[in-house]
Image 1: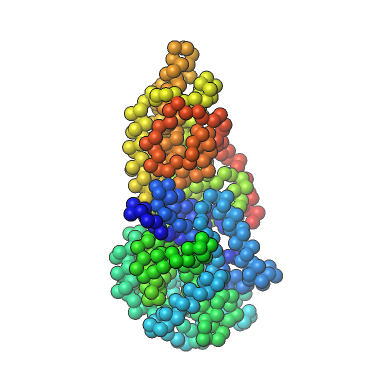
Image 2 (image 1 turned 135 degrees about the vertical axis):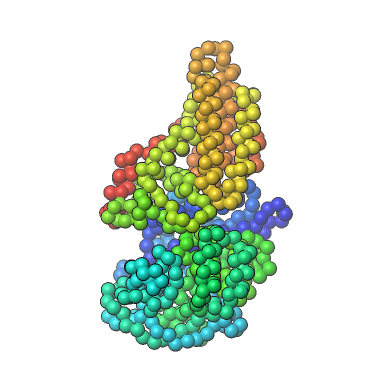
Amino acid sequence: MSKENSKRDILVTNALPYANGPLHIGHLLEHIQSDIWVRYQRLIGNNCTYICGEDAHGTAIMLKAEENKLSPEELIEQVKISHMEDFLAFNISHDNYHTTHSEENRFFSEIIFTRLKEKGFIEEREIEQLFDTERQIFLSDRYVKGTCPSCGAEDQYGDNCEICSSTYSATDLIDPISVITETKPEIKKSSHLFFKLSDLKSEIKDWLDNALVPRQALNKLSEWIDGDLKDWNISRDEPYFGFKIPGYPGKYFYVWLDAPIGYLASHKNYLDKLHKAEDFDLYWGIDSKAELYHFIGKDIMYFHALFFPAMLLKSDFRQPSGVFIHGFLTVDGQKMSKSRGTFILASTYREILDPVYLRYYFAAKLGTGVDDIDLNLEDFCQRANSDLVGKFINIGSRTAKFINENFKNKLSKTVHNEALINEFIDRSSVISEAYENREFNKAIREIMFLADKANRYIDKMEPWVLFKDKKNKELVQSVCTTSLNLFRLMAIMLSPVIPTLSEKIYLFLNIKFPQWNDMNKILLNHEIGVYKPLLTRIEMDKIEKIREKSKEL
């Protein structure tokens, strides 16, 4: 934990990717969103830890492993490696990436279950479940599809509706079908364990009143609380891949019980690696003063904003400081589709294009709302070329050559327009506030406004014209020094969004990686490196190549 009062201790988590397949660009939306916020917090000097891991349990893992003739353990290890490679390629800066299939997770799952049971919040009941007679298996929620009982949307899974966000039991679905065998399942009775969520309405309301949760999401969450808040089934019958529930033969913890507990497990694993096990309670203890934030999609806000905080409270752990919720990703205005070439895997994208473009485009779209975000591929191409190359990189490319070729790579001892530099520095406070509030789209608008100003300054001064007269030599050096200082400031401002590109700019400018509060420093009489192209324009044939490759999946 940090010792200085000015520094905040922050723990950030993402929803854990499910360990039965590769990442697609929809997964990346959330991880890029949280990574930008984490990088900003680190940039301003806060102690921000960022953890994640594989969601590694459930029927889907078991069946996928059987299909691939692997053990579940072999499957989740393979998938974990591929996920980590994708995250690394997209500059996602996790401090620790673990798995729910771990001894840490077993330990915390059993502790939380035991404490809830001792306090009377676990109840055993006989219920009806859907059973696939052909496969001889009880069907988990994700292996049943049917019509939503709340809004009538078709082709919905057996736990929650992607259209209206309602939650329900699989047996509530209209015309349910087994995803495994495409047969109509039978209803069978079985004894299961329930977390008595319905007893905790007032506690959940208290948490929501004090936590940071998007207003749009609060409206939906309030509907659930004020309505029929159901107790949650936390057990599953064998065969099942997961942790056995102590004292209940043939019963396993449901994946939605141990998946969010994976946040505790991943953090514990990280602290153990650092030999700082004693810090765990400083973050997760009931009296913790640290900040804890979850970045998640709107489809799982029920679990993170109702179920998990209540479960933590009644098992003597601290509750989250906030849950930041985003919408779904559409591509070209529609749900991702393999036939249209818009179901884009992370690996497909990164083989063809630099991740910097996608990080920038998502940032330009992301605010604090829970509305869906559209990746329009033509707009993506045009915006990346216009903003990143045409505006931002252009500032450096059109002035650096004068310093390289005519001044032995040396910046001038004075700047031509210190007032403009100070204006950029002053404007950084607005951009800082936008980052803090997760209004990344506002931060991008502000930075591009400054980029336009920098380019207008260069256009007005016309160093290429001034240089034709030898008496203007020092003026040209000073104008270009002003411009490169503006370029540096914007590289710092954009570094949470495009970290690798900012790093290239720092190397070109021959400076150490700066913090946010280093903006008030001006580079004078300083030797820079030789400018080399930092980023090229996206050609539409690259977009078509992504589409064609995605159709082959």
